Length: 358
Image (cartoon, rainbow, N blue to C red):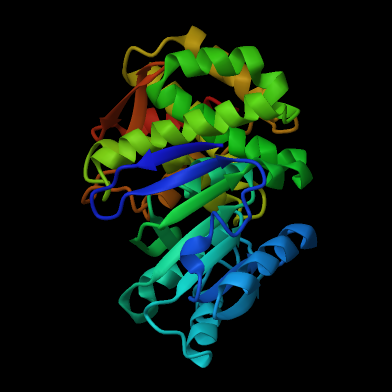
């Protein structure tokens, strides 16, 4: 078991990475507390039952709210369902919400906690690789709007996160691939040695070899934690975590949140961002090809040569929340492990980066 400190001034907390983390000792802070478990209905019953058993022994008032976690349902209706459960059961401001599920479940549970009675505590049990390396750190909570992804939300930090690698055993390969897209992102923006290590051990990671998996998750969380600890509200350096996401969120919207998963969209978005880094700066093609090769290994079913309508993607970017005024903010690479923030980029260069995948 490894404990990683997220040193955010407003609310420092720990992310615990390991196995068999669902136990009374880890959750002792919930003794005698009102607890609402928000669980994705797709989580295997064995995981759900184990956490319900532990919470039942600890909590003075345990209730369960199951949700259908999907991008289409990451909306105000699902948020209302959680709020209504809290209000109907007369939960006080001293309550805890516990999320059991992937990134969508973690995001919407966090936002429900941020907005119920102006803010209550929450704990995360992320059950996917993507949520363990991404949603577990930073306190970004949100729901989608029909016109854009994660447009309505708040910064609200959890009190604790448990990244249990045992949850990953039942995941389809596609969801492992989605999580590895974010892992690769962290290496590309901040740690070239970690990128080298991923290239060497990618087969062991894909097959969920425990030690390789623990290091992958832990190092990825450490990178994000180091960045977030310096800039909680994304006013500066935290923006580098959006590498691939300005393109990626536009791709998700392009496919109406059905054609491409978040991880696939980020993978394609990173390739576009690296092409843009090459066009506008010093990023080398050989490093782009290394990254492309690694992305192909984690997601061999994903077509990396897609003819997107460049103007449609650019239009989708216009509602991206990462804008500064009327300018889109792009995170580009100088080299593997070194990211930079860039605002002044021509539409022509953006279009060239998009069409480079065709």
